[in-house]
Image 1 (cartoon, rainbow, N blue to C red):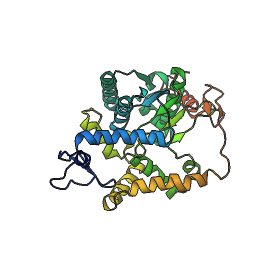
Image 2: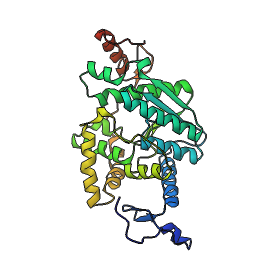
Image 3: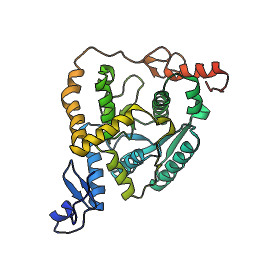
Length: 317
């Protein structure tokens, strides 16, 4: 986000004959806005994205996956203000102070907006992420992602929600797209879309912030005085996606709008072509837990077996 020109005025205020000072400049939109109109712009952009991709309507029950971070809390706040039936869902990963602080912030925010926050504890359901990390050969983020997707889907169905909304922003989506393109991972490129439709036990998953940058989400939380956890999960250190974000941010500084152009260009031009190729395997049902899976035994049940064999962790089946 570029610096404001000295003395810049809010462009929306100007159209109303007012001269309120701008507090933010969005270079790729060429917009100078005051605090009030920035908040309105953000919420309208969320609404526009929801409608563009036909994510859900105000008749749907939406479960927002919240982490205590800026993106998910910004999303939840915007959805509530826009009049959607949106409640929160938090997974306690058991990562020491990080999980304790993020859970408290999520609970505080739920009280502020007057909406329920459903909580699942990995310590009770499976094992804390630090324990999972000790017995697997995969990067912690990989195992954690699979676990979160499993419990989000299971609990959404159990609680009667038809939609799962996540706070993935434009920076997240572009970093993933860059990595998958760099390695020509067609399997994942075929699935990179703001909406993953419901199918055979899977709830519909949507990303209403997919066209909003990380900085824009952070600014929205600051202007709304939303307290969020300001540091990254300790297990994310060294992740390739963080390196990709840094590279792409440098490019964005030199050429504003590059991220959005790269992402929307993929959605409009390449994603439709990828859907014309060979069909993907269809989900089946896990023999052990009954949840949808692309193998006979889902990744979480396999993980439970590993944890049981390790003898160090008590696992709930």
